[in-house]
Image (cartoon, rainbow, N blue to C red; front, top):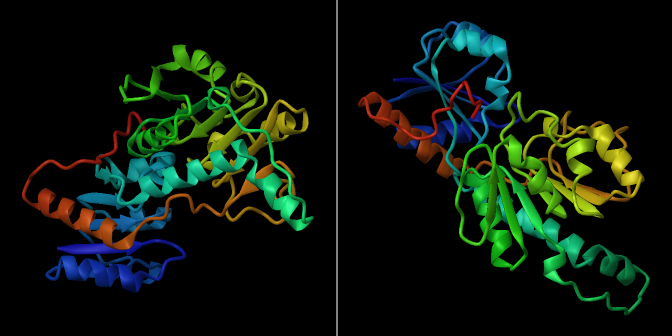
Length: 312
């Protein structure tokens, strides 16, 4: 069995060593243009270049090092080259709990005004802010997959009114759920803090725009931990500067790293982080990938196979 690995910015050796521990009989290597002629049975990748798929013509499956596969599904030229080869995403792999704590932190920081207390500390001011009524802080989670479900359940556990919206019908304890395009406006109009955990597809690109964000209870707040392409950046800036939105916490961006000249860096109502809300955990990810490869080799079904029609 032959496995090729590619992930820009990662040292491939620890990942190869981890794979070798799980699959000692496998032949493993990190993909480079210089080794393009070596043919693999499986690819383990993140943000792979087109050339990888142009040269790897015998793949049985492609494993994506993340919960989303949009770096492949949103590139038609890659889909054509794969020509039906299975694309497999990770099922949580330790990322959901990270994302839930990130979202809850952003929610609490805004709702409880912890940034105000931090500013007061710098001025040696001892002042209390008014207590909050959680009923006035309804939170809406867009996307109720493995990540979104964990986020929604975590928010609900702190007794914030919690709503969820997804493509198909879902039922979650403590969460009022909506589904389908026809219910989107109703969902948005009941929400003050909007959390985006959607997969990126043609249908969801640009879904965070002036119309949708403008429907939030005022003053609304946005937390985006999904993909930068979900957000129309100019619309967000206009809503912030116009007072319709109180602020935003952003972990993902249309261009990463975020250019130093981007207006988000210095905007007083935006908190940003460098795509760290849910970091791929090596040991858990490799364990899951190895188990799925073994299952495929035995002709067994696996979870996480991406539907090219849906994009996730």
